Every structure is written in C-alpha cells, then in structure tokens.
Image (cartoon, rainbow, N blue to C red; front, side):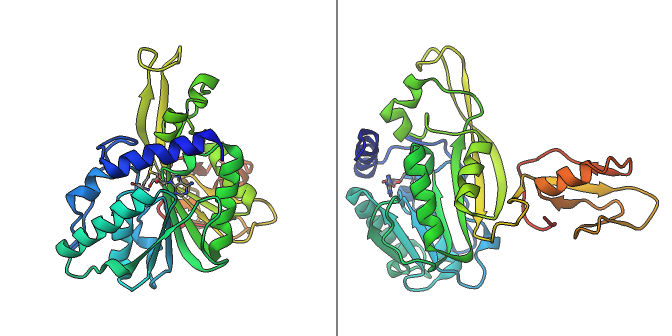
Length: 323
Ligand SMILES: C[S@@+](CC[C@H](N)C(=O)[O-])C[C@H]1O[C@@H](n2cnc3c(N)ncnc32)[C@H](O)[C@@H]1O
C-alpha cells in the first residue's frame, strides 16, 4: 500500500478515537428535518465538506451505499428517507471509525424514535475494492474521501462506484476542488492530503475522471468557498484558494456526442414567437429559463441568435431542463 494511504488510515484512526471538530473540513450547517435529531457526537465528527444528501435522489426507497462513514451523520440522514433494515450500507477501511460510528448510531437510536441501528449495515472495506455486488446500488455517496486519492487510486475508486451502481444509479459526492496549480511539496505532503487540503483537482479534471469511467450525466449542484493555504502557514509562495463542490454522477449511457454536464447554465428565448424549437429536443418557452447542459449551451450559442440568452455556469444545478 502507498505511504499516503497508510497516513490517511492513521489520520482517521486518530479522528475516530478523539473527535476533532473541523479536523478535515470546514463546519457546514447541520441540517435536521422534522423528527430527525443529529447527536452532538456526529456533529463533532462531521468530516465532510458539503452535503451528499439531496431529497430528490431519495424517492422510492433506494438501496444506498456510503463509502468513508466518518461519524455516521450522513448515513443517519439517508436512513431518514429510507427507514428500512439494511437500507444503507456503510463501508470504511478504518476499524476505529467503524466502531465509533456504530456507537454513534446507538446514540442516534436513543434520540430518534423512528431510527434503528440495523437500518445501517457497516462493512469493513476499501473504496478501492468495495465489498459490494455489481449493479446492486441505487444511490452511492462519498464525502471528502476521493480528493485524498492520487490519480491511479481515484480512477480505481470511481470504477468501483460505477461497478456497484445499477444502470441509471447515481454517485453523489462532495469534495474540495482547486483551480490553481499546487506545488509538489503541497501535493506530496501526506498529512495535508489526508486532511483534504492538498489533493484537490480543478473542477474540469474532477468531472473528466467521472466521464472517463462512463458516467453519462453529471450535475454540479453547489460550489462553495472552503479553505485557503497561505504562504505564512503552508509551503506555498502564493495564496491558494480551495472550494468545495457537490456533484452527482449518473450511470446513464454515454451519449454519442459526449456526456451531459450540467453546471447551472440556462437558456432564455426572448424573440417574437411563443417559443423557440431547435429541433434537437429543446423547446424554449418565451421568457422562461430552461436549464441546459454545457453541450446544449454550446450548440445554442453557435446559432448566434440575437433572441436567445445563455447564462454563465452558476454551479448550482437543481434538476429539470434538458440535455
Ligand atoms: C474526510 S473523512 C469523511 C467522513 C464522512 N464522509 C464525513 O463526511 O464526515 C474520510 C473517511 O473515509 C475513510 N477512509 C479513508 N480511506 C478510505 C478507504 N481507502 N476506503 C474507505 N474508507 C476510507 C476514513 O476512515 C473516514 O471515515
């Protein structure tokens, strides 16, 4: 095993044995729903950098997988929507983290009358070799784990998620990203990498890693400020700005003309008719924004019409529209 993976296991062993608020990631607002109480210990062990729990993914009792369980908060949130024995499988490679989350689920059981610990099946396993059957999962999630991996391991981890998802299943993720080039000292600092600070990729490279595996639809759902690495405290001459994104990769077949990547663009037709039809599957009702993927944005732009406005990416795509 590579050294940096061993260091990562060690970092999360420590984080399981003594919860460290903000150890890896910034504190996100903790959301609770009616009847859903998140135990304090789970909040303290929130080592994610965004949310992977989106209600619109969670209809029809999906079979769920969560890789890199941390304190278990998001597995509890997923269970809220599922409420079935074994409805959520949690996989982690660190024994101490599995043990800590097991304990936290017991606490959650005391604070949530609807929740039973056996809604979650905890399995020891590696993101690079998941102990899960092919084509068996509707919604898979990971939060703040994949950014730690170097390219070879990242490829393997994405391939494993793709393997276990059913056709049209979705991989929901949150990870830091960075558009600046990080120097090798930062990149190869095993502890910084394990702490989700120096492994992040630019958004385009992150998305490419997903589409290279075959995910036909990508949704970028949120993009937020995350951290800075400043020259006084880190081995860098320039200040590095890191963001976090929330992304869903859907196991749709790959379209012949390439993946549909939704980055929050919309088209608005404001011409003299009631609607504009591009005869390629897109009907723009007058003065109504239609969410479009980047491919469609490019093809509508290429028409060079003076009655269609294409917005910039908002990096906040929340469904609808067409590809
Ligand atoms: C940054 S923490 C995120 C925890 C959780 N997802 C959250 O949002 O709070 C990374 C998690 O991945 C686990 N982990 C590290 N390497 C792993 C691997 N190769 N396979 C599976 N889990 C791993 C750690 O033990 C830890 O629980």
